[in-house]
Length: 274
Image (cartoon, rainbow, N blue to C red; front, top):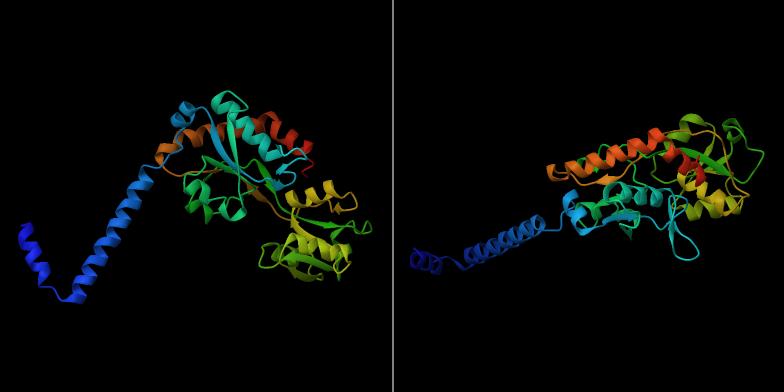
């Protein structure tokens, strides 16, 4: 049979032979990648317990959720949550390895099995849930407004004022609904928004409460209007698959206990979250 195949291949036109070889190489690569993914280090709970630690992707530059202090130690609400989950899953608060992560990698680190979980200010959405699983929310974030002008106390005070919003963000629709007479100014980043407030180019900036609370902690001249205009659940990112059922169940049960006992609310208050 092999000799016959060789003879047949010899009589193939050069172009057809090239296509056949290319296709063979392509499918070999796909096969190898597929099997490599199957044999990758999976984050099933028994494996985590055997190795003695859980790896969690976190933010290290996002006060007050996850940030490094002056000594380089990670702090914040999400760091507290990760540490407490290590206690529940492994019995030790130091049984966790933190992996600082950029926003663009928060889901992919779980998908690629680089970490077991991600706790890095990820909003649970239906589109994201097609790729990963989400825990019950540990904090309800949402749109709020920050300013350095103490005369602004109510939403109506911002009518006909310039309010900065991130370009292409869902915040635009929220502000248009609640303050239809405000003049929206699109910005590319939080840094640009802060610069425009400092230069009095805009009167206020609308964004997520968790981020704005960090501004107030770093600079007391800022104040946040006491009304949350939307609700966005922050959840732990977990892998999909039946083999991770126990891990997901244990994480969800733990967070439910933290909510019921008031522990999560206490930690959020401690870190200055509204």
